[in-house]
Length: 141
Image: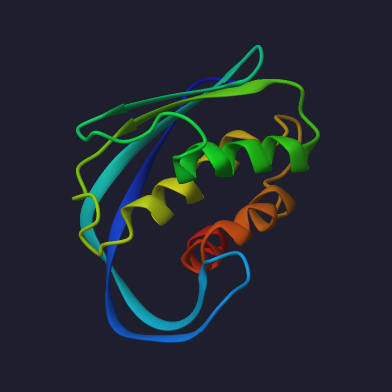
């Protein structure tokens, strides 16, 4: 697989209601959001094994503490791939600024886990959805 470069857009919530706290610690929400022009950059490339995450532009975990890393692990498992994924994340969206940067970043790695000979699949993306409610919206369109 050649490198895939994706824009990972920020969003603003025009309406947000917390419905309930889930057993996994995340929340079910109702939200109306608008994407904005501010974007992080996510570069994806297959590798021999494992996941390697590099983050520039912010001090963030480069392991399972990062949503993009966890989304990649779930997507690779769901796709049944033995290969790994290299993720290079260039942060421009302020961390913890309420702009959905982490969720947007996590929606990108499943694209790199799609089998190269297949049409884009929804299964790897669906598998990542337990991470964040916002991911469901970002992964689906």
